[in-house]
Length: 240
Ligand SMILES: N[C@@H](CCC(=O)N[C@@H](CS)C(=O)NCC(=O)O)C(=O)O
Image 1 (cartoon, helix red, strand yellow):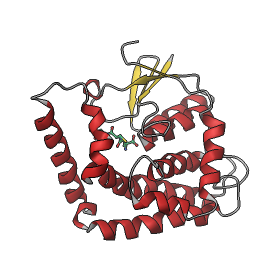
Image 2 (cartoon, rainbow, N blue to C red):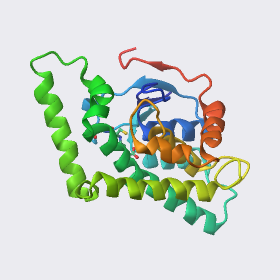
Image 3 (cartoon, rainbow, N blue to C red):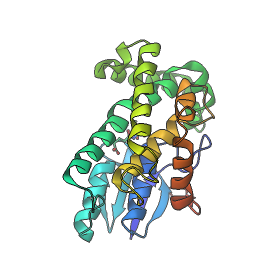
Image 4 (tube, rainbow, N blue to C red):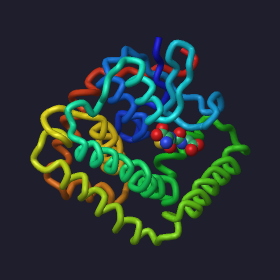
């Protein structure tokens, strides 16, 4: 039995997390039968989602989850790609995960207007007076980690300049193809979908939305991925 732990629909997206979207899509590409449950980060070592429980074994991190199932099933999500395309796929994924995602996190968590309509919902169950100090602590932790990484040392305008180039790179790589490397989706499409869906979420007031809109091929691409992988996604609470 396989369970994907993450978060379901929120902010007008199928999940608030690009990494949960990535893993959801990749599990489907691999033909894994799985159920979706709300994550409890206190129960896992890395304190991050997605994580998967597969026959009693917990695997954390979207890439390790992918590798676990590829190995177990003898499958390759990049089957059919040339070595050059494999290199491009990996590089695109890293850009989406390790740079564009961080800029998206800054937009949601560090911009006050976005925070109070979005991520603050994650604290809805915390009773006052504990809620405010916890919210402040978590936001300070995120601000600190962005400083430590370096992305938080850029001005917002500089970060957005970088994000615009990242979004353009995905659009350029996609071109007029249905998916990044042709007629069928491969591993990188899962993260491109997750990352660009999150950037493009109209729920938030962020220039990232306009960046996604500004490339004629991106919204139709996201719609293709959504129709293919999320027409009947169901989530249940953690305890269920
Ligand atoms: N490298 C991880 C990143 C996962 C990640 O950053 N998850 C975020 C949600 S999008 C999370 O769980 N954050 C909670 C926290 O940092 O406390 C992966 O690929 O799975």
